[in-house]
Image 1: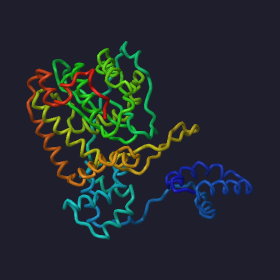
Image 2: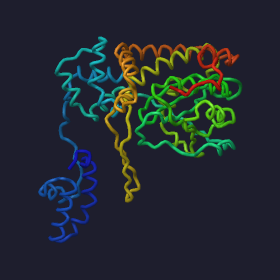
Image 3: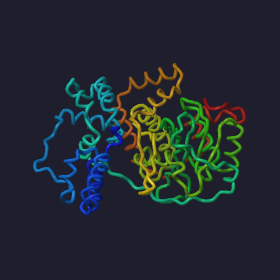
Image 4: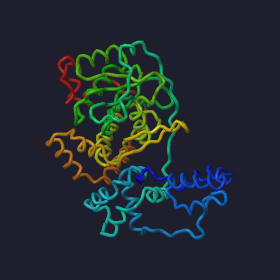
Amino acid sequence: MPEEERMTIDERYKYLRRQHGRYDKADRAEKGRLLDEMEAVTGLHRKSLIRRLTSRPERKKRRRQRGPIYRAEVRQVVLTVAEATDWACAERLRFRLTWMAKHLEYHGEVSLNQEILAALERISVSTVRRILSTLPHPQLRLPRRPSTPNPIARKVTVAHIPWDVEEPGHVEIDLVHHAGGSSQGEYLHTLQVVDVASGWSERAVVPGRSYLAVSTALAYLLDHLPFPVLEVHCDNGSEFLNHHVLTLSQERWPGVRLTRSRPYHKNDNRLVEQRNFALVRAYLGYGRLASPQQARLLSRLYQLQRLYHNLFQPVMHLVEKTYDPETGTTRRRYDQTTTPFDRLLTLNALDDVTRQAWEDKRLAINPLQMRETIYALRDQLLAMPTTTGPGDVRVLLDLLYPSHTTIPLEEAALPR
């Protein structure tokens, strides 16, 4: 039986408790048939099943708990790697432990030997989860926000990017508001782009929600992706579904497909919605950001975040979904976690020059130092007073994206 199809201990006991009533009431012949069935399902020996079914099967606690298998040096390396990846979950972290530990050793952050490396190779996800549980990470909760119908939406195709798409270039986009407790006046936004196949993500600062600001930031992000764009998928927000952006997409990107989510179905834009929390709200919270000084500092933070998350943050990718009609549940299976950059390499989405340039960048970066710099910028940004709005949007856009506000829209080329 394949390893991924074996029952866990809890699943096995749950199954035996359900069969216990049938087995207890059955005659000798029927008990034999039930034992054959349970032996095939659980993989347990026949005599072991008989011993468990003499009474109601319950999992017993150990009389004496096991001591720690891994030394303190191994646990410290796991915690250092977890900090370097901004406390990624155990499932994302497990298969990147050895690579990241060696990378941190190259930068002098950890000290490794053959014993520690062997332990990192064989450590399980459950053990990593227990080690990480010693440092609880607080979680924020996102409020519900209803969608608003838009008549322009009828001109855009309703669709969603399949979860198992294998070709990079199908991206989801969304706008995150930094309005604080009031939506009055002008304030900053974050425009985020996420590629479904690789998990590659980019962010840009948008001063307001005007056509000029949104289109400039969108053009900047699409131009800086290391692969060509094939499809852009948005929600039903009026910042994307309006006459100006629709005309822009038809004239500037005629070969790129524009699609939108179904109204009130946020899961159609699932990846970018998840990144809105993990890469924006978890860093900046829900406070108000409005001043030009905050916009420039946030733009610097996003430039560092682009390198940190795409080169060092392992992501999980769904590879199989199985629906059980009896229980009404869907079981999901994920592949081995790796970074968005490594997924692009696996998919052969980068040419040799681009690949070598990004590999050189990654080798030169110390992820622990970059993480400290990102959080220092974040703390400096949140400590700034927010007294005025973005001011002259054209002037601020010229400072943030100088190469994308001087090109006439009708002369712009397709994103590279």
